[in-house]
Amino acid sequence: MQQENFNPYASIMVYSGRPNPRWQLSTEEWHQLSKLMDTLPKITENGGGPYQLDSPLGYSGFHAHFSIISSYPDIYYVANKCQAILSNPAGYMIFTDEQKQVENWFKDSAKNHGLVCGQNEIFKTCGSPCISTCTYKPDICIAMCSTGCFCKEGYVRESNKTGSSCIKQEDCENVNVLPTCAENEEFLTCGSACPPTCNDWSYPLPKQPTPCIMMCKRGCFCKNGLYRSKDGKCVKPEECCGKNEVFTSCGSACVETCNNKPDMCTDQCVAGCFCGRPNHVRLNNNTNSLCIPPNECPK
Image (cartoon, rainbow, N blue to C red; front, side):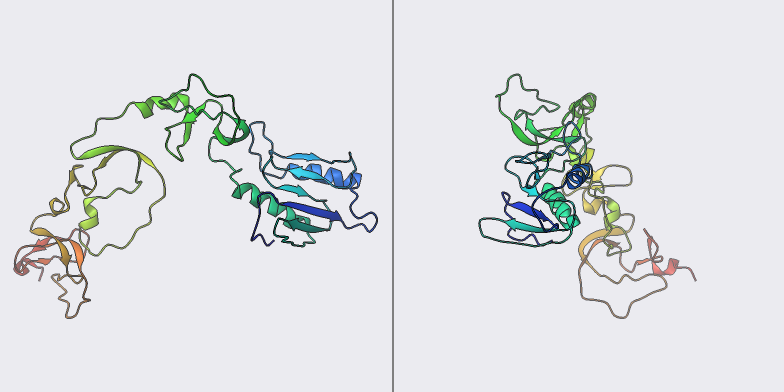
């Protein structure tokens, strides 16, 4: 269903396919609407919509009034074949013959307007504007409703940062007790799941991009510009290199080995650890291959 120019205060009017009166809901259609509510996202504190199904003219009135919450779209439709009109101040209109399209429009609208909450969250139409975190619990708060996603009962925000996760109250002990990090390290509540290591500069080069999951990791990480070495220390790139190696920011993309001396090479700079002694070559093209003089190459 087309949704451009969507207005958050728009409404869908869906008429019955029966010829006379086409707007009248039958008892069966009303029951079908009630069943449809069970298929919609369960995102409120009581396991509901937040949806309301009623009719301005009683049980079998002119139309069904299916609302999300105040200030969000209202939807009027019946469960059989129908004609839907979406109207907004611009006079924009669409038509459909399938109830499923109207249902999908409703679900997409709920998701796009933030009505689908994250892990350990629930949607509330009247939540507190004063949020408890692991390090803050408000003593007093203004008596005002706030609409949106809130932590479930027994959970609090990890911090007051935007997008902070909801965690169990007892897990806050691990949050508040910060570990003592080693030299050249810093504690991060949202560090990379794939932190930089000295392997980033090891042979063979250049390194191919590797995927990394988008996930926050808590703990001690190397400070910016430093890399984790094999012995667990955070060091500068030039300290990552091994015996007979030196770090360069513009090395060759074609490295000479005992059994391969490239005749041609691409004109590009490659940063990393290269053989630093004169006339030294890589033993082979294996990972972390040693730099040796040519006379030590296998015959």
